[in-house]
Length: 107
Image 1 (tube, rainbow, N blue to C red):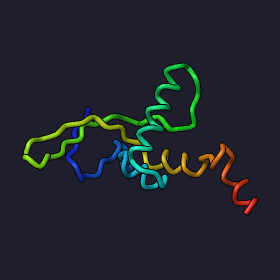
Image 2: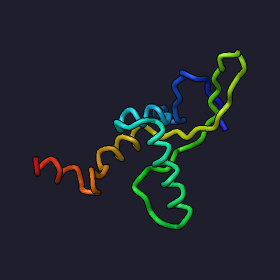
Image 3: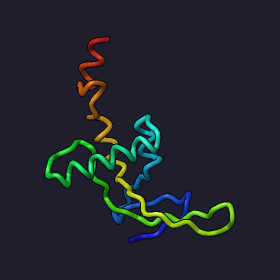
């Protein structure tokens, strides 16, 4: 498992940028806590053998940050390819499970 310091960008072996939860959430227009909830629910759904639209993380990394007292804090965090996040957001369902294209036509 790779290790990355807080604030550093992360790239896949082919050079594509990998997004952390906070970056994914910002693009999706939700909080990081909400996105973590989506991710957790999707993992449970997959473990039950069912399909979900939420993208599977591409890898997990160890992210190291420094707490206020100077001690390091190491946490495992999922990351997603930027292209996978963009594809998911382009096809994401709107409120009530309706495709966003239908919502835009109704306005």
